[in-house]
Structure formats: C-alpha cells, structure tokens
Length: 510
Ligand code: SF4
Image 1 (tube, rainbow, N blue to C red):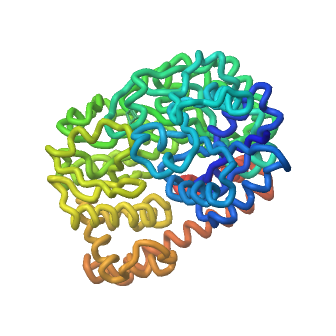
Image 2: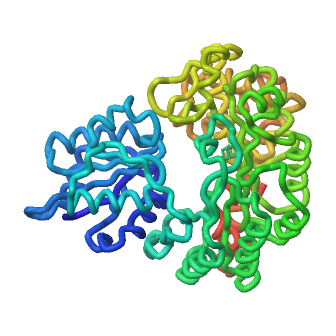
Image 3: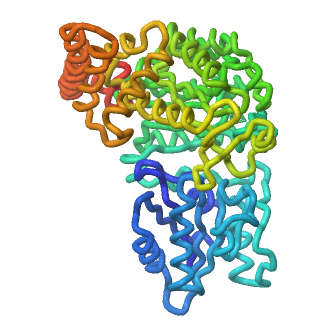
C-alpha cells in the first residue's frame, strides 16, 4: 500500500504545512507515505497522471487531498477524473472546505472518505483501518483533536529546497478565542498552544539549516504575551548574532492588545525584519456587534498609529467590505480612518461565506447574496446592491495595484487627497471605464492612466503630475540600484533588503 498526501497550493512558494503535519504523524505508516504538491492552474489530467505514477504494481494507493476554498474546484475535477480512470484508488479528503456541510458537496460525493476538522491523528488511524481492516463503515469521520503534546511537529520535513525557495509556514498555537462570525476560527472558541520550548527548538533547527523567512499562521500571535515575547526574543537574538544575514518574521495580531512589554520588543526589530497582519475588518461598532467581533476601536487605532510612528514593523491591515450592516458610507468612513493611521498596506477584502461560519444567520435580515461558486464572495446585500459591490471589488483590485504595490508612493497621497475613499473610487471607476480591465494592466500603462486621471479629472498640471509619477519610478530605480550595490558590498542595508519580501522592500524604500 502506498499513501500519497497531496494538494494544489495557490503558488509554488507556498509549502503546505498541513500535509507535513500529516506525514509527521503517520507513525509506522510514514515509510510508505509521500508528499507531492501541485500548484493551482496545473492541468487536471496531468495531476492525475502524476498521482497515478505513485501506484505500485498489485498495490493499492490511498490519496489524501488537502481541500481549501482556493483549490476545491480544481481538486473536484482531479478527483472526478481519478475515479473514472482508476476507481480502485482510495480517496480521502480533509481540510476546512470539506469539514462542514458535508452532505452538500460534489467532491464529497465522489470521494471514499472525509475527515472533518483536525487530521493529525485521525488520518493515520483511518489509513490503518483501510489497510488492515475492518474497513471503515462511515464515509465522514470527525477528526479527533489530540492533546497538543501528542502532535509531532513537522518542521524537519521542510526540505533544503523548501528552505531555499519557499515560504515556511509555522505555528506556535492553533485556534482563536474570538468569535467573529465570518471566520472559521470562530468555531474554535479557544486557542491551543504548542509547547513553546519544543517549538522554538524546531525554529532553531530551521534557522541553522538556512531558513530566514518565517510566516506564523497563528490566528492571534499576541494572545499570550509571555509566549509572544519568548518568540520575539528568539528572532531578536538571531538578528543580534547575525545582523548581516537577518531573519524576517510575519505574525497575525489583534490590534487592541499591545501591552508595553510587547511594544518594547517590537521596537527592537530593525526595518525589513518584522511584519504584522492586523485584522480591523470594520470600524463600525454596529457591524462589529452584529458579527460578534469584540474590538476596542480607539485602542486599535492608537496601537496602529503607535506601530507606524514608533516601530519599523511593516503593517498590513485588513478591512472587509460587504459585512451585514455596513453601508457604503460607513465602509468609506472606516477606510478613511485607516488610511489616516498610515499602515503600509490595506488589504481590502470582500466578504466570503466560508462553509461552517455563522455569518449566514444574517442572510434573511440583511439579504446576503453570495456567489454559489467558490470562493463564495458576497454579490449584494441589503445596503450594498450588486452594482455597488462590483465597484468595491474593482476598488480592491486597483488598490492592490496602485497603493499596496508600493509603486506609487509619492503619487498616492495626491490621488487620495482629503477624501481617500471617494477619490480612489473616482480613479477606480475612471480606470475601469477607460480600460474595461481589472487585471493584466502593465505598470507603464497603469502609470499613464494614473497620470491622465490626475490631469484631466483632478485638474493637476501636466508638469506636476509628470514630476510626481516619475519620482516614483526614479525612487524605485534608485532603490534597485542601491540594493544591488549594497548587496555586492555585503553591507547591512543590502542584506536586510535581501531577506525582506519584494513588496515590503518597496515600502521601506518609499
Ligand atoms: S477574525 Fe481573527 S480574531 Fe476573529 S475569530 Fe477569526 S482569527 Fe479570531
């Protein structure tokens, strides 16, 4: 019997932590278990062909798929083809997308077994049953959640190739104590930490093997401050010992909980070594209360401002459009408030209906209409009709290209003026009207569009606009040259930029 663990990642650079957890916990089945990761966009028939290459003569093949909102459509195709050409292959599904509403999904109808929730111990147990009998009677198995100390950590399964070329996902805890109704973690009700010293030992081995980019998937890094400090100290020690070969760490934090001890630690990180993803989602207290999100808005704003002014952390702050009770006006007010705080990036997301999340309790009262196809994006609600939601979707796309990209650092404040949401929406509507496109707009063309809009719609002189836009290009070129020069000379700035992801480097250079 051969067991293959597989999934389709969103990008090659994303190494699946979930598959590595399964492999680490296979026990005496580990020797016959392998991982093969694919990337979204691969041809389904090619994926099936590669999966079937693992089949040994006269032996059964069990294939475990990690199914997520971003790959469910493609994995459904793969499973459908697999079942046509090799019906004897045993297919086991797991992952958040198949952990809820199991009776309503095509992919589940096609598969042999499904494990909902945690798979660390339940997947190997199910494989044992399939191999040694008695054969499992049920199709859907509720995954058992073992004590955290019983879960084998998977970090030694990151290969040298992963360490060199891919983002390493790590987690010091699972779960979240908060209950935001749009989020799958709302179902956890609490967070479960891994034993911190054992975890840091694994981080040490990764570091010694050359890992420099660590992305924490913990839902709330700053929940237990003692643990957060210990983790931060680990990275600070590395930075102190090897400032010319720095690490880069990414954490998700809740914005209204930043005690002084944590601030002190944060301040010690040099530029280009620390990134925070901060969920604001909405600044509207009525919306927050509707979706059971507890957030002290004043404290959150104060902390974001403090981080911008007193730390070098790169800040990526999330807002969600389309939440029940959020009007265009209240969303605009929240957006403007956030822009004024000055984070490097605003991730402007559109509400999605993740399977299992309690947000659907508002469906009737707020006329929530979601796309029936993944990723189940909201199309309209009582306060934001379809046409207006479309404008928000395009705003989000152009915002990413113009603002978050860091390519228009000098021009952006002029675009936004005193009313960031209104002005950027005007640019967004205009660009769409003139291009009919939200993707594949080359940078030069985008710069031309922005220049035209500033001149013809905002009445700014040609000379001023040309100076502005070209200063962004010049800044980028200078930064590029500077990085190359300093990297060659091996100085501190060049090395820091080398460890820092490209987009963050642009924001640092701005
Ligand atoms: S949105 Fe963040 S804080 Fe809220 S439940 Fe999800 S992970 Fe927890």
